[in-house]
Image (cartoon, rainbow, N blue to C red; front, side, top):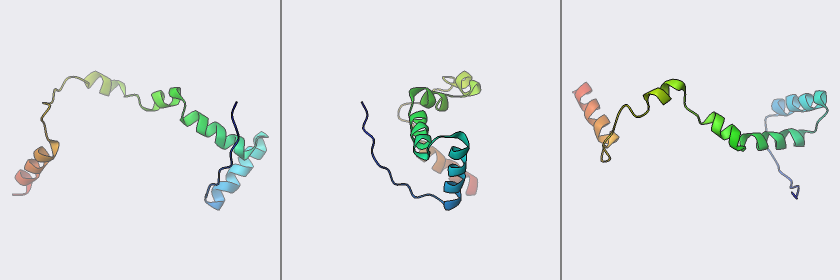
Length: 85
């Protein structure tokens, strides 16, 4: 059983007007729209879908091995020194 709570949002007036028109045309409340949005973006399937890698990245994963003690900052600093000296 869930308990409803109040949430105050500060949004651009134009965005609010568009959202009110959107929900009016669909016969739902603005609260329901926001609740559904929050449920969607926090669902496991949404998170999995939006954190997956492209096929190219998946194909390239594991090709390069980096030593555990690799310091990219030192490497980048050396690169910049060589480039600009």
